[in-house]
Image 1 (tube, rainbow, N blue to C red):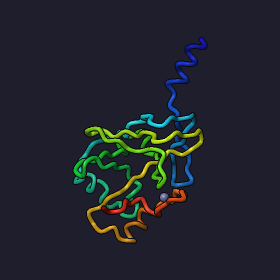
Image 2: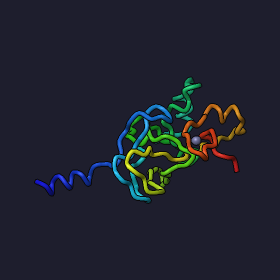
Image 3: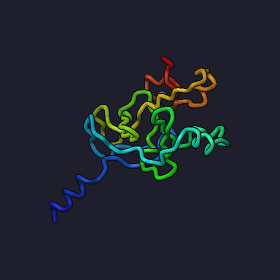
Image 4: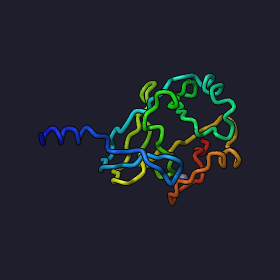
Length: 158
Ligand SMILES: [Zn+2]
């Protein structure tokens, strides 16, 4: 009986979806998470950007509420279709997680030790073909609250 409980506990995911101060819903550690832990795969339907742009064409303002994760500039994962808790992980400018690409798969991994109650965040680092204007940055405004917050989810252009 007790071993069974232990096994169940170990198999349980160390995070849960809750309301977030950053934006809408977020994902929070419910247990200690060591650095370098592969937490979850960013699942969804793999489609081309062409299809994604058509699918969300009249989304306008709501643009970033879609659950799109760029794979390679051509393909994208749409977590609105078949997505899991990973789609609720918010952007943060001082991230405790990062997204790792492996072929067409994306995994979210911790990059430092995370305490129970901490919100899981990774740097979305959006890059656009168009110029990164103040307007564009404002459209993807960041409210992560980190000291190092750059005020936007848009990456610095190299
Ligand atoms: Zn920020």
